[in-house]
Amino acid sequence: MAAQAVIGGAGVRWLPDGRSTATRQRAAGLGLRSAASLRELAETCEIVLSVCPPAVALDVAEQVAATGFRGLYVDANAISPDRMAAVTRLFEGSGATVVDGGITGPPPREAGTTRLYLSGDPTAVARVATLFEGTALAPVALEGPIGRASALKLAFAAYNKISYALAAQARALADGHGVLDDLLDLAAHSLPDTPLARTEQLVGAGPRAWRWEPEMREIAHAWREAGLPTAFAEAAAETFARWEAHKDNWTVTGARLIADLRQADGNPAP
Image (cartoon, rainbow, N blue to C red; front, side, top):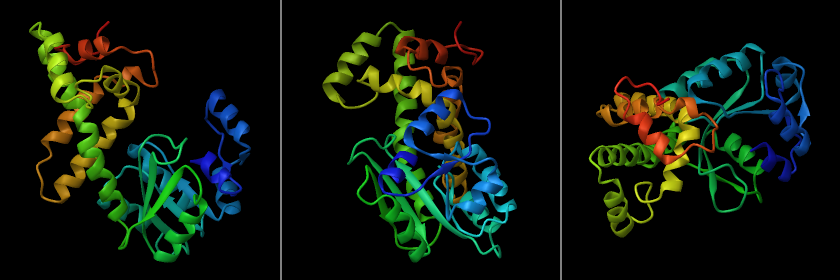
């Protein structure tokens, strides 16, 4: 997202404290300017975009609010509408404006793949949208209050990401009975463009599971608030939790992921 904001013509600052060497190198390559502290970042930037694992989104908002930030705060994390309301309350009376954001699609590297949905004050939403006009990240303004972008993001993620957990569970069941190859053949015939049929697509969930697990918790929270059953999201969270050891490991295999699911104690396979 920082790369796309730079392409859009914005001056972008970031906070390198606690980040890896690889992250620092990427930031330098993009021409991002570093800030010595979060307070310095808040004092020098008109807009702060929060893009982090959903489990820490509220903590990040609390830290930014504590600096006395008076600009435009965009929470673009996969959090429930209820959690988004809590973020908004942190900035009440501060002079800051909050915009609700939801990102769908992969990291934006080419046009037509990734969208940033925005809701809240129309003037503030329009201001955020201008940051990414003409870039690979397509801003989409939603009419209505804060919470709508978060609801849309989680509704889409529920269907999209839980399908990976279902595919993995189906494969594990078939593998346990010696019919995995037959299942893959059937899936290739009947459901060719799904994680059930495409091993390379399913494997991509392994390195991301550490982020997807808390996202499933947020989905369960959102469903509970809406009076809906939560079991699907909770089961998907349990599935992804068994893959957390593969964080950012893009060499993990489908066989290893299936083996991890079949461990009776819930611990990853050795």
